Image (tube, rainbow, N blue to C red):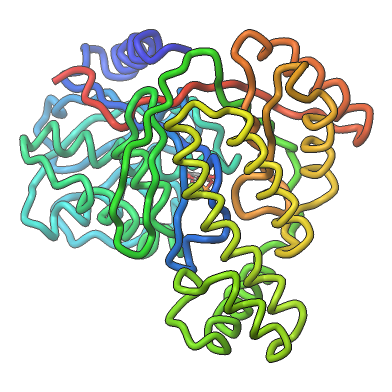
Length: 390
Ligand code: ADP
Ligand code: MG
């Protein structure tokens, strides 16, 4: 759904729920990471884009002046009711902790929002690896900025949202999701340096290409323990190489230290060091509209994640193989798993005029190979958080 139509829908939702039109409407997008996987906790680079799927909030002051934030979500049967007269703490109602943590961050800075009635509708699939959580946090933060008239610096806003996810939702996420949801711009990717937190908008204006996201609709549970292992292996490699983190290591120094580390540690490091290079190269190639180059880097990223980092799975590999089989003649430049791995989504760079055909081909071949149904949708790079009304 286009953002204008979605916002009209949420205004109607609000009217139905609260018997009056909303005074404010805000939106914040989900995201997909185009390249740069498992680089964030190695102080490296990521290249996400905001997608045309959003958490939209419509709001007004409560007519009785109550000092609480009441949020109805189309995704949850129980509304979140957040009392502003007492210190905020995480609540047993899990989903309320995302907005709760964000509100707490504003209150900590002395920004009082006052009571609100809110209606929330999100087109970002929940738990699908496209960061519905960051979209919810950043949407909440954008609403508070609109209501209070106090705009935060974008970096501070993103970090406030990340802190909410850490401390209230108890999820130790990196900075990528919140940064892109705040700072995304239409027809741009965002190159983010996870060490310095410097960002660079990378123009991707050519309308002849878009990103096609395919959700495998599987999540293999071994993921969480493996994640801690990977981190430890990266630290071990950095230690042998004598660098603060793998961000600082060069391919040549890794090669010469190969004998001093276990083979598995070597391969983990080779992924991270190579992935950082690929990410920076991909940003340059996007800037130059060199789509086959971008696509080749995406395939190389996938192979490295599959063979060296070992975080892929049969379903992700199946989609990448199908995409590779379709090839540039069929409109696919490249494809890779995106996100932490062990399930979740792939992202492909596809010719815009081939999107429908490719969607159909991937869907059918994935079904045939795995017996599963993939959820597939295309997106051009979307804008970051916006105030639509108010
Ligand atoms: P992802 O961010 O990849 O979608 P997460 O597990 O990080 O997955 O976040 C999903 C959680 O965020 C949901 O389980 C829910 O608690 C919360 N959430 C996200 N969007 C909404 C929404 N529109 N309404 C209510 N809760 C939401
Ligand atoms: Mg999330």
